[in-house]
Length: 348
Image (cartoon, rainbow, N blue to C red; front, top):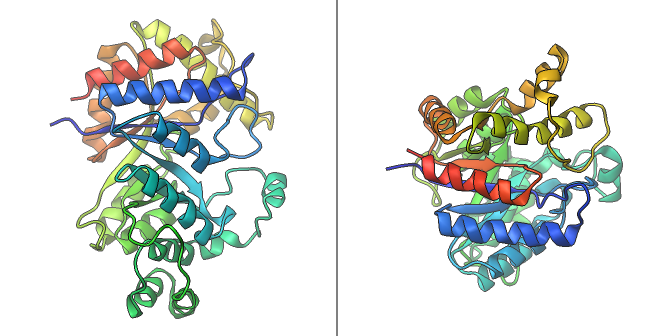
């Protein structure tokens, strides 16, 4: 049986376009993904990025879920330190009522923004320090009040003081939320997230599509330290990969050049919208450019259907992944659809 494939989308605003068109294309992609057999369609929270329109993540999740029928839709993820757990529980509880059995909630502790934007979000610089207890508090809003179990989970995640704080929220109800079926995932790119997901018995999504450095150590820690929970009996990992698939290797490399430019612009502190592919860019990259790009895009399948099939097969064998989350930032919408269609057709 081939492992499931899922999609991570950022509702990209490409050069010469706008947010309205980005949302139309995102929904169109989700509808095609549903037809091609993808399991999930996730959207990511980013702020202050000129080429990303998914800042109001829960709103966009509702838009996509409302325009599809069976595919799971969720956050990949919500940057929890930017929000109170209660507000996120209310938002995703509402989504679960509207679209029962189809909503996922992946949470991470990164800001999803630069420092100035973080201040505009009223994010406390130390907010990430309470991420473990915030995850526990968030999860408990989805359950009826159950007394000491809440504190026990919090103590396992962060010690007695954190347990005390979570126990203090015992009387608060997130409406509508309690009893709703919203699986919580931990997202991460380091050993911290792996350890937390393992200790809480949650599925783990690793952001290897842009931060591959600690992929294998993190998967090892997660599997070794995993504790079964009410949500999950055994470890479940979903690494992220970039896939740029086209009818030929040369065309796939041309499509990939758009994202390569984005990475180089980010490295110099000049985030821009996704631009059209640039002929000759790949060949013109310096050794330093390649090092920068490889450090972020090392987990990328770029090529024809046969090339992508072989790459995915090797990656799945090396990681023993239970599921793959695919990202594909391509300038032309038709070419992006074709890339995802190829990926769905070549999975083993």
